[in-house]
Image 1 (cartoon, one colour):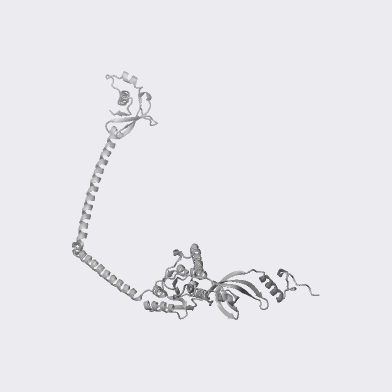
Image 2: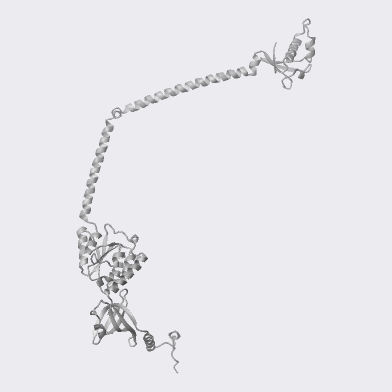
Length: 448
């Protein structure tokens, strides 16, 4: 006995799968439960057959499409004939054909999208992109002065290609192009232009890309206001020049491009410099350089003549001679000042020496004074410090000798009489005692 099939897709297994018919029926049931809806797109194929027209409705921004069947009476009710490339909005009901497993739309009504609606949508997109900063001037890159190779995206065998190439080569004959011919209108224009742009952007020698198209109706230029194309140009690393339509046309591509040309002819003039003008600039610059060099040479020559005419150049040693005389004068002056200072210093030293000699103890001794010391070297300062018979040392100008007091000084002063002369040694001690008594606070004694 066969087991029942699972009711839900999540319950299926390898052992209990759904047959194709079951899946197709379930998808059909799910699609049938969808309500009617309005959908917008671009007609890329239109095939009327009897009372029904079959067309392919494509999304203008991405490569996605659906098959649509619409009654001919709804097509004939349109205010303008339906043609390929037209933007339409239709009311349809999704249906799933189980036999072939295809999804299609059964349309009830079909209406053309007016130019006013398209322009309103372009304006909304323009404001959105501007708010994101896609059109900001600070993100635009400079156009190279002389590119190695120019990338050109244009229509197949179009007049725009001829205008760009001929005008560029007329200005710079050696310019090289990398051309990509694509559809510039219709359903595939956006996809082909974006693909060509990315291919040229990855080319190692292409330094600038020109997207060119001749004039046309407003709806024919709408692909160049497509959001996908605008964002592709903004993401390109290579500078892009927009040359779409005429000067009055302004698709969004003009706003995002790094430079906008009013016409394809203007783009051919912008992409390369004018060889004749650049040659004239080179010739003019060379002439100005030559004249400046001649003027500089004449100026230096005049300066050289002025230098040679100076007296110092006629007698080069004269300057050395003057400096030598100045140096000799300075040396003589320095020697005189040094000698004067030496004499002055010698006088000052002699004066100081004399002062030292005059104030030295030896000078005092030379005048007849003597220094009396105890045995331990203490100087006798008071007569009371001297004992009778104490050996004292007397230092004079030329040597020293020892003495012994015979009294304490007071008695000797009283007993001395002129009638009884004493021996020589006693007289010396007596004079020394009297000298000490007469000058108790002097440290020197005058010799007899």
